Image (cartoon, rainbow, N blue to C red; front, side):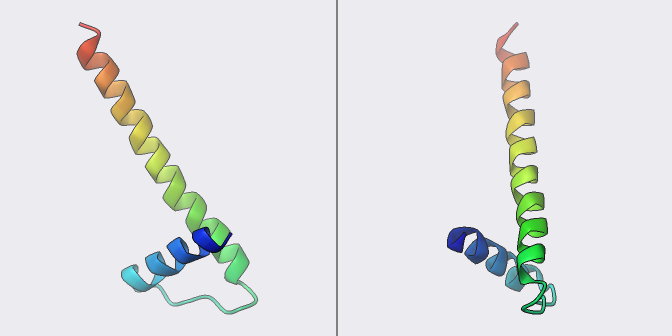
Length: 57
């Protein structure tokens, strides 16, 4: 979980989001990490689909 916390902390500091309180840090980490990783997987899936469509012809 330390790696994910580091990624989330970096995202929070880069984007300028107000850091969560210590009581809400775990929930915020899960929410932000799921959004970040979900976006990465969606883009990878879209690119895979596009590559498949291009080379299937």
